[in-house]
Length: 598
Image 1 (cartoon, rainbow, N blue to C red):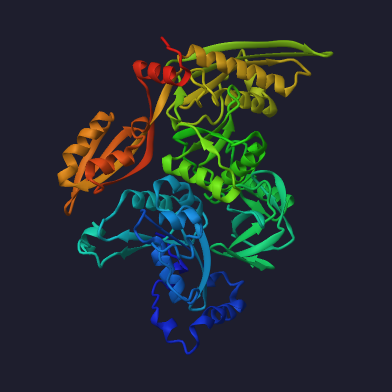
Image 2: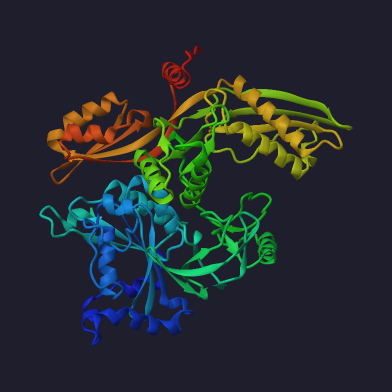
């Protein structure tokens, strides 16, 4: 854990606020006046996240901080739906946090940008994107339940970004709370357009200026600069290093992008990066071999495990639905929507049943579209079973131009989940040592296009490595022709390599009383689960297992029935595993309506 000025504020004592010789309603304004001279002093700014397992008390704790720092005049209550940070209607109805909420308060001459994050596993990405810009975090632990699954997940996420953390034990007043055992979770606003949260690492941002997006290679204009207090916004003219602010006017920027003052500044950073191979580990490149453009480390977005079709209530509202999905995808990188070219349907992919249910409700409440979601389906992947070697030739004439491409590719299984780049196999006979970069990019673009949909059920192909053994091209042949030849070769290679389906395998943790343990274990066995361990904690049993996601549809309802509502569970993606021939035949038949023999 690195040292940080973050620790200077951890001795909060609310009595100081209560002892101020001022009317309580003016406390916030007084703090803001005191801070006005300190806005540009980074040592006086703290960006703090609050994270924990669902129902550990994150939002309630945040409400107390806001009250004792003088931000609010009363303590909000989750059960009453009166909290400041849970401002979405669904958050107040369900009593859970769905989106990360940013809010600013002041304490002891310090400005604190406080971020309340979700605790439900379906919204892990909300935590991930918040952690990326924090100086420190408070992990709230339910002392009566101990260290729960999502607590471990968010702790590992914070560890990845080297974020200083402290643990706050909550609910110590409950009868079964035990300190010793406790020690062993971009928004769109219709009035303001697309809103983007920024963490300023260096320099300052001013309203009305242009800044450059390094990832998208686009210039964006800062129409308005806003300080955010949950769902309330205050215009400011500028913001300095260390602050988290909100910007309106961005059209291309998405979560994880790096922004600099101008394209020339990005080019200068690129030259410096190329000249200094020992650049900070936080500076990464999309292509470490070519050292293209240095950017701040982005987010690790987990693969969606569920998908369903989404349909507009009428043809006239289809454009509105497309716009709503575009806005929601910008806000939530773990959500994706794509068009199925065969059926013409829009396919919505997400992290779980609750995740997609929330999206459907947001489309209705925020955009007024009563969209229909089709049956929930598993987002399978595909991979190859054996090696395949293909030589492909494209020889055609378009107008007066003759196009000729010949390439030889081979595919085989790989331990890496995602394809990154093609491996060049150099020999005396081929000319791969002199292949041009734009030709290689065109080949790789074709490979990626082919891997986006495999031959079995058009699911993405993973755990595949691709090698290029030979490449010949005629003068004047266009790059799209190179990509087209690469796509054709890759598709044939996947057919020859006996591509099979892979199913998502989830890590599942079930917490229950000993009375319900046999019934829950029996139910998990019927769901093709592999029990890895059973631990005892006080009078509770904690089951750790791995289970195919296809067997967990509706598990929340089933578990409540088996345990009379006395058990809880959490999920996270573990890995993908190839289906047996019988199971693959069953999935193909259920999906296409056609029997399949292999």
